[in-house]
Image (cartoon, each protein chain N blue to C red):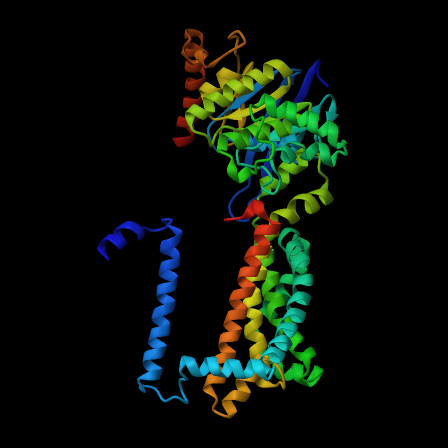
Length: 261
Length: 266
């Protein structure tokens, strides 16, 4: 497959036929390459199929056309090489924080001692040292998403897929989570594919931002974000940020208008 | 009164424990007082409504001659037999039925057919087939609870979040692991609640079966007391069943809190 790209989404389409009504093209003609250690963000209006795209990459659903390649190998089913953080809270309520983070390691057969090493390292990274024995029902939304992130990272995936992981959080918590994610990414240099409808978030986090159109979902535009790293939320008020934001907003606005009219 | 309503009567509002217990105790006392009033004033004939004291005396007598204990033990073992048998089959089958469409297609139509048959209508047939002994009572309880459990547990299983299963796949789990490590634990609180509710129904079917035909058990105890117009003994039998129900209900809550502390308060 093409060049040095880590993850390739090659001309993918997703169609389905609902019981009632005409066939739906959720995604069409999607071509996207994510380089090694690159942070790519897909931004688009709700209903544009961006979550479906991420689920395709995860292998949870199959494309109608095209194929997805990770390190040159075609994706056919879910696997631990593609870790995912969901928008909804997906911690296992019967496991405490530590056991949640170690879930993937445990079913992978890693011995207890090594599991404990890894889980405490990642819990430290997300700032939850001391919460090892807490159960999810005692955690706030932001804390649950941090555990979910630690759980995905503990499995050491090739690609980290993030589906609006901070979408359900209040704006202050979200800003803290974004900075934390930037810091972790800076250190680990994971390849990340991140999905959001929040333009600010996409620019703050991404090396590249892909703007998606709705119905059928297509990649409309790719924007390189050349704001220097390391970045903090202060970036949000810089002039270069503003000009990129204007460009993306205009692009999305055109789409939204088209969708309405 | 105004301030009580003002302070404690908003929808979904939590109230202090002492207020909660106070209200419960008050209602209990009011019911008891109403009973006393009706019984002692002579408003209702004593062979229709026994006095509380008469019921206590009947209880003492039935405990002394051993008939209460014997009948209770008999009924409880019938319940346990039928209920445990039904649960052993219904829990795994229900979990599969709610999550595997193939199992659902195989079982649901039959279940929905049987579920609407009143168990009492099957009692004559069961008597013909297995007689009037403990086997028949167990069969009645089994049929009465099994199909309801199946449907309720299938719903519990159906409601397990898709994302929870999906995230497990992305963490490297295969299908078998998803079922054993995720689907089954996720259904446990709902399964416990279902068992708790259906155990209450099991009592209903048992008493129906015992009233139709039996020579032992609490239903028989009640029926037999009716023949001699011993309303005090009828009341006693009903109260013992009520107390046993209350006891098992609390027991289930306790077990749930012990086994599934992560789900407590749900």
